Amino acid sequence: SQTIHQWPATLVQPVGSPLSLECTVEGTSNPNLYWYRQAAGRGLQLLFYSVGIGQISSEVPQNLSASRPQDRQFILSSKKLLLSDSGFYLCAWNRLTNTEAFFGQGTRLTVV
Amino acid sequence: TQLLEQSPQFLSIQEGENLTVYCNSSSVFSSLQWYRQEPGEGPVLLVTVVTGGEVKKLKRLTFQFGDARKDSSLHITAAQPGDTGLYLCAGSNNAGNMLTFGGGTRLMVKP
Image 1 (tube, each protein chain N blue to C red):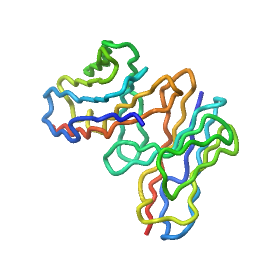
Image 2 (image 1 turned 30 degrees about the vertical axis):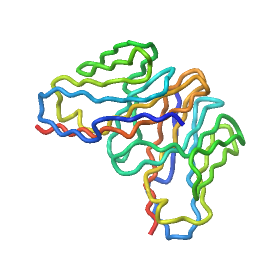
Image 3 (image 1 turned 60 degrees about the vertical axis):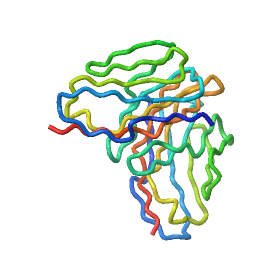
């Protein structure tokens, strides 16, 4: 069966510090991978998606970047965090032929 | 970017009442999904609709895809406190399975 792991679950970082959130998928190959950010009680804003290794599409210009060094690994990064980067970050995957998305447990990021 | 608008944004009702949540767009989607999310967790898929006019039922939940595949609705009959949560619709088009999410409807069912 397929599983998705996302860590850490919570993170408190000072303004100006770097960020690295990691997401890995098991049990499938060549998944579409996504990073979303969610404001409290609201919908999901798509940040990045990837259809293959090294292929990253950005939906919203911002202080963040994403990388896909391996087929089932998706990393969200920042060189210098801003207060506005605080939020709930979700990693997700789906297949090309099946659009159901499976989500990780999310990372609650607080920039102080 | 295709946009999905959900309404209402917030809904607070008493146990036993019925409700309908709407998801609208000016774009056509090849499929539309409904998710439910608990606080601090990722969304979980409830249903996928792919055919214009399609109706799917999941116990007390009824999902409908508009004939033109631009909108969808979720109707809950006799709501229960366990239905409380954030309901999200998400659309996919044929140009690669990128999912676009609506703004969500936060439902609270009071006992």
